[in-house]
Image (tube, rainbow, N blue to C red):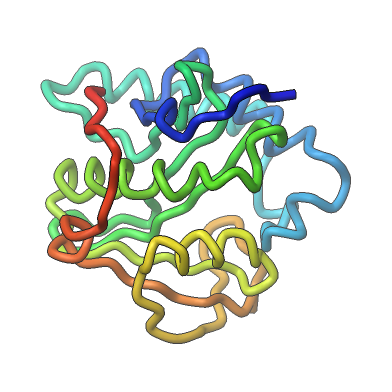
Length: 194
């Protein structure tokens, strides 16, 4: 149980090898029905071993670059990894689709996204020179929709989606944030070095 929880202790950093077990546990060992409840089709996920190797390879390749081009950021609370943000698919110099997952169920429903979303958005906007970021949130994931509404992201409609590991034909609420809009998001947050 979390005692004296403080949103000021939320930060983001590049995904690391030490975070991979948390990600694997989240995707492959969550309670039955959880992954489906957020719009994911487990049949589209591949195996845990494939996911682990893919993440390891992505992190290794990124270490060879002068500047990070990693499309995944770990959310931390007091430096403890508790979730991640990713952007995929991604079109450099244009847009990407933002995703958020809290690995540690003790941190769900605590408003973490109100801090971590703006932090991650700023990193992704700069890292990939994006004009805008889209959120295509499955309609059944009401908690994730509430976070976006609370922050004040602009809803631009609904559409059926089927990219990545999302269940084919999932109805999603779509939000859009431009570079100019994210700079205006009020915050008491600090920019976290990566």
